[in-house]
Image 1: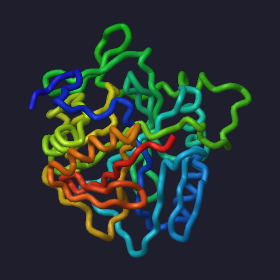
Image 2: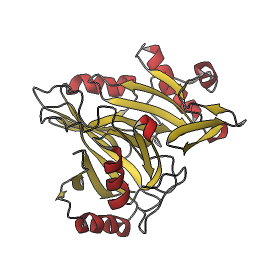
Image 3: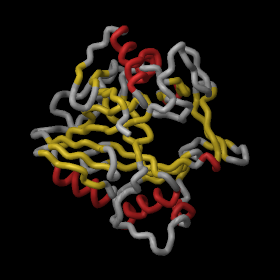
Image 4: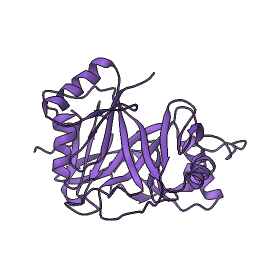
Length: 305
């Protein structure tokens, strides 16, 4: 497989305007998770039906939670590494991070140069990234099987520096309040998955679904794929171990994530490739459900405007 710092394209590429849609998680304690996502994260509760809820920024659901009993958290399995919510500006990210700081919720502010971010886990260990784009600060590339970042002055960075939180908080305004909901244009920027084999996962997401390869960093056991030249819509890693099995049925964590195709034509093209590959799929209320080779659930649907 050819590795490049720019997108590799097959004869078919998924529609450039493809985005990540809602992510669905199985949780052990819905009430506690609701408190966390509303109070610590600033999500709005969109709806509730029995043991299921939908949350987000007031528009389409970003997060779906389903409570089940007798669940466990497993390690050494495939599934969700983190879901990344992208904010429209440094100021909006600063509000979200300041809210976490105010309640002393553990998080890890990180400067990826091209993005400003912080990492945290929810109350049941599901990974979360909050970030905003900052292309004015520098760029990144994959070179010689490594991930590299460069500041705007051209100097090298490992892309995992500690974030200058004081500088970020300098974007706050005096009248900014922390007990507010996330802005309505907050969305899921990317999903990062634990897989059993990076090359196998890339073959699925690139070779079948049509995402472009942005790079594979063998040194980090990680690959990025995307639509339309974005830095990545999907991250793929083997940090839970090469050949990791899927989680058991009683596991906390990922049920599925959603790929939002921009129109019916784009959706039909991807579904035709899924069918041609002989992959099993199932039409559900959420969309067309299939599974990648690591048994991570993937839902395909047409984006609802």
